[in-house]
Picture 1 (spheres, rainbow, N blue to C red):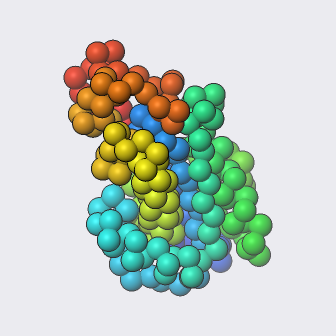
Picture 2 (cartoon, one colour):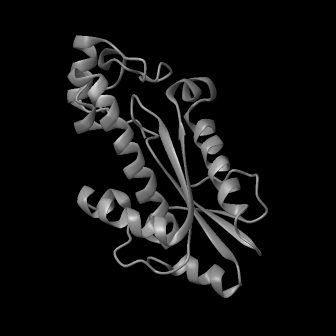
Length: 205
């Protein structure tokens, strides 16, 4: 139930920072991490993947207005250098430190998924956290909208790649374009970018 973990920690007098990312699986573009500590309940929050683009964009200003928040974008070249897991943790640590520095009192960091950063005293990995924590749900929306806007800007630079449609994910359309046009500066060189070297099942994560 959305908010159940938030209530648990609030009853222990902890301030909550929810953390989520967007873009671990794509073949190109950044992985974007967001951390959010909400001041109040926001109606309509939910897992960003289950909300329409219109709804995510509508919720964005409400999240920004009613929280302490931070967004950090990790570039493809950093992903290639660190690998996607460590690049994501790097981005998370940046966001968490920034938000935590503005909060007084005890803080718990709730991270969507099955891993923590290992850098903070109170951290909890929450499987499907965006459906259990309002703070994680808010972070998931912030990260998703921010990354989509980045990919839409790249679409204007590389219009033949249709980044505004597939957002860099491993779709049939994207593989077809790579095989025809080659890769760009924002493709992740450490990922398997060509279908012939990749199994028929295209899902990476």
